[in-house]
Amino acid sequence: MDYMILELIQKIRTPFLDNFFVFFTRIGNAAEIWLLVILILFINKKTRKLAYFALAALALELALVELVIKPLVQRPRPFIGYDQIELLISAPNSYSFPSGHAASSFAIVAFLYLNNIKYKNILLFMAFLMAFSRLYLFVHFPSDVLVGIIVGTLIAYLVNKLMIKSNNKITNN
Image (cartoon, rainbow, N blue to C red; front, side, top):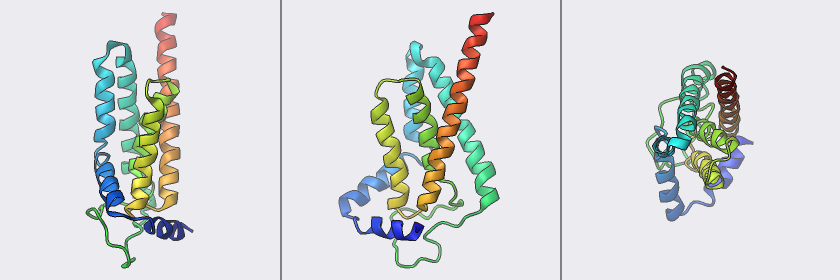
């Protein structure tokens, strides 16, 4: 089923979409787009605490996905042994499961969404584009992306609970 979905996506490829999704995935390679969002939050004193916790969500996602789950599962990328696809980006050298791009996007955006941040719907749309870019570029299976979204959302929920708990400790002291 994973390959069937990937092959369907390949049928919508156009030069415009190729360039768009290559750009979009590159601004997520080291979470640059989400670090920029966090930086903007740091600038405003009212959202500075959110920025600290968003950064914690990103760090937790990185550690969990890249240092724990991917090395444990060791799922090869979909393009491995699939000669019919010409990659538009350099072949990633890490494992496929789960998608770190999807997990980092949703760790940040779901956390900000839970906190009703301004422009949350635009950020959510960007997170979905980031996740889809990995499918379009044939570097992740749909199940990798789905699990990345779930992992990122769970991290966001956990970090949000920790932030609420820290707020309660401050007000109770």
